[in-house]
Length: 89
Image 1 (cartoon, helix red, strand yellow):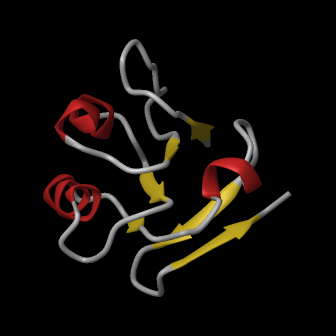
Image 2 (tube, rainbow, N blue to C red):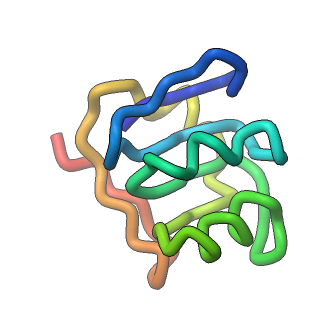
């Protein structure tokens, strides 16, 4: 899992979970390698939700303080169907 605050110059390893404050079209290249998405803002028709559906990756949006509570390197489980994010370690 990787917390990214700005997409410009950001790198995401294949399968890593992207945790971001929000997304817009500048974030789209990161979806190519992301294993899942977690954002602090958004809803069912937000950019992150729509692009995640298009790429077939699970997404949970509208998670307050996700970028401050979660830390790069942590193991988390993202269940897009249930809308949950669980810290595994």
